[in-house]
Length: 71
Image (cartoon, rainbow, N blue to C red; front, side):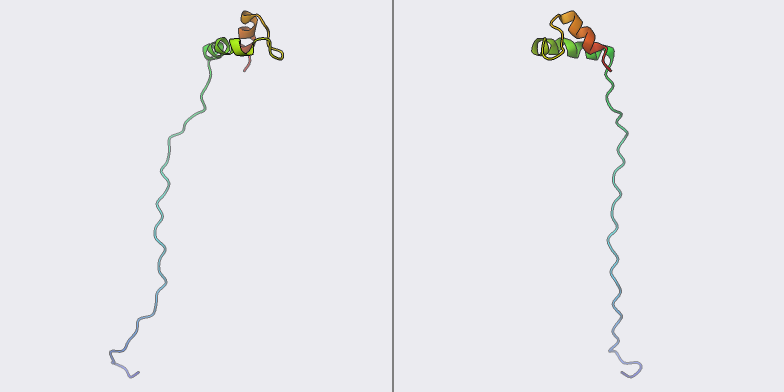
């Protein structure tokens, strides 16, 4: 083509990839800590279903002490 003609075709440029959004930063959620009182309450609720099974004591007070003192 001669110079100055209107038949100019611009080169094809590679398309830019769309910008990705960053993930939203979530606040740190520490693992739940169980207190001694929580373990005692859980042992009281578990006693009727688990007394005497395996190594579990049949006496409720012993059962609660054993469960509450486990980490």
